Image 1 (tube, rainbow, N blue to C red):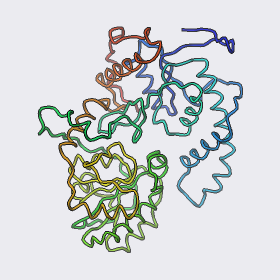
Image 2 (spheres, rainbow, N blue to C red):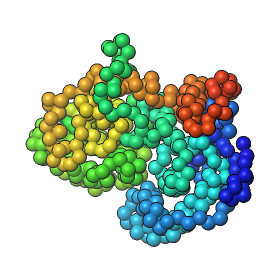
Image 3 (cartoon, one colour):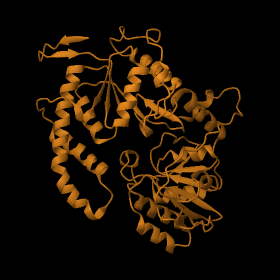
Image 4 (cartoon, helix red, strand yellow):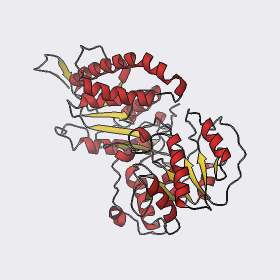
Length: 417
């Protein structure tokens, strides 16, 4: 539907959903959603960096510097020896790109007036520009991300990871269990790409804590980890906490993130000199999780996988599965040492865990990997999206489930390569 703005005199297109993307893979996926889930709606799939030219719009210096700071943290290439030169060379270009994107996004949203904007992740620097623009429009946002369970996809109108809409109160799950309280959730671990890390022979200690690394520049660390800001710091904290705990029977096994580009040569050398520290990049992840006394993670989904495999978990950051009696939490080195000592008497509330996972499977995640979406995947998104849009103001003209076109089979099993 097109109208003319009284303020600007420009023609305004009122769309239902605007999909903003950064990469070609997300473009293909969003186009599939447009065609297969939301064909009865007015949807646009638009690249952040393909927006039409627009007149310059002033972005406050305070907001600009906040976006630049987060962008530099995100784009830092984890090689300290070239950091300063990259910072000096890239900052003017980065500032110019942010100003340009801000103006174009502002003009585009003003001209299209979408009822909902869908983005992937929501924490990248382009997304931060969008959030700054959206302060003026207050358009509801739908966030997509990899699923919190294997072979699933996240679609949340609150956010992702620690900002998602999964309830954190243990009592919420009291009524969530089906009658079959003994039902088990057999969820296979994720398959990770093989890395080209140095092969080091590994002999598993009799008792150990597993510490999986995360990516230093991931939003999970930048936005959801208040006191651990790097894997070097995580390494040091764990060593100190182990000493403070006085658990002489425990070792620590570190595990690098499979897609991290950071080099940890210095940490390998420190671990090699320590009698109770080591790295294990060779063993199957599920195997070393299962044999660990506990998994200590900042907020990785490995924490949830560990719970599903029957291993105790201590978290150091904000995580959507931080629920009392399901995990232990620590926000300082001394508290972590105390929680390590508390592991002997702690046991995961299995009743709560079963209800929690049942909620994730039945009510939260979108079934199916977004890279290989099938009919149920599209149908679930269709239903949830239309239900949400129907709650927004002036939504009476929106399509209902009965109005939508039937899903065509030709694209249902197409892999997003």
